[in-house]
Length: 114
Length: 113
Image (cartoon, rainbow over all chains, first blue to last red; front, side, top):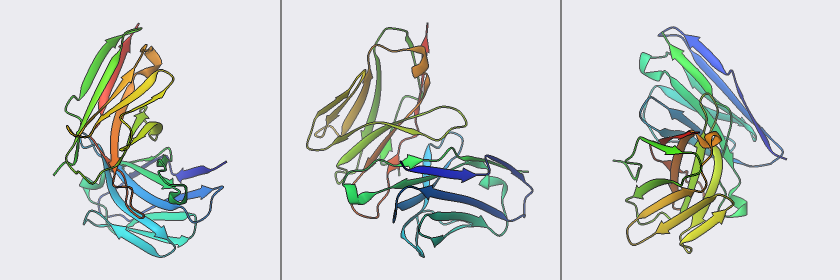
């Protein structure tokens, strides 16, 4: 069965510091991978998605970036965090080869920028 | 520009009664709709979905209804249980390769015993 791992679970970082959140998927190959953010009162906002290694689409301009160095690895980064980057970050995957396929989420990372 | 709207931030229901969560969308290209349930400090979990070729899909206590002409869908939970207390997100997609789900802001359901 497929599983998704996301770490760390919680993170407190000062403004201006770098960020690296990692997500890996097991039990499938060539998944579509996504980063979402849940900010207070704003629901789930799509940040990035990837349909393959090195292929990244950005949905929201910001100081975050994403990379997919391996088929089942998705990384969310920032060179300098802002206070507004605080939120709950969620990685997700889906297999579009099976037609209508729901997103499967990791347990998320709670990021607090101080 | 919100393409998926959940206009009720919260809903309170007594155990055993029906919970009805509503969702409206604006993009006529959406043809795949889902509901997710989320507990605090956890990722959302997939609950039920419906394709635009159907108007109803049922899975145990959960039923999703789709009204394409009104661009409206709803989730019915019968009977409601205290363990159903969570945030429920509606999501939609045009089901094209490489696109992602668009989520509403969520409705917090509280089921009291």
